[in-house]
Image 1 (cartoon, helix red, strand yellow):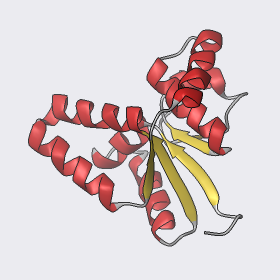
Image 2 (tube, rainbow, N blue to C red; image 1 turned 60 degrees about the horizontal axis):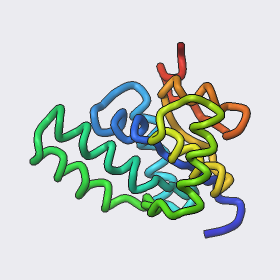
Image 3 (cartoon, rainbow, N blue to C red; image 1 turned 30 degrees about the horizontal axis):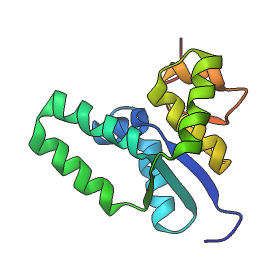
Length: 142
C-alpha cells in the first residue's frame, strides 16, 4: 500500500450503520470497497469491534452477531488490539473531553494512526479539534 493511501478509523457507529442499512452505511460501503482496491486503509480497535458485536446480538440475536462478525473478517479492516499506550491515550481523552471510554478508544487510535475517524456519533464533536472526523450522513448533529 502506498504512502498516499487515505487512512480511516471506523467506530462502532459506522459499522452498525453499514450492517443495519442506515443512511451513513453507504459511505462505509464506499470505504470498504476502496480498501479492497488498496485505495484506503481501514482500522478499528478490538473494543469497538466488541461494541458492534454486543449491540448486534442484543438487538438481533447471537446468530446475526456471528454473521456480522464473519462478514467483518472478510473485509480489509485491520482490528487493532488495545495495548498500554492506546489505553492511556484513551484515558487522557476521557479525562479532558468527557465522552464515553469506548469512543475514546476509537479517537485515540485515529490519533495514533494519524487517520480520519468515521462516525455519526455526535459525542465525537467534543474531540473534533484533536482528531480529524468524517461525519456520516445524518450523524454528528446535536
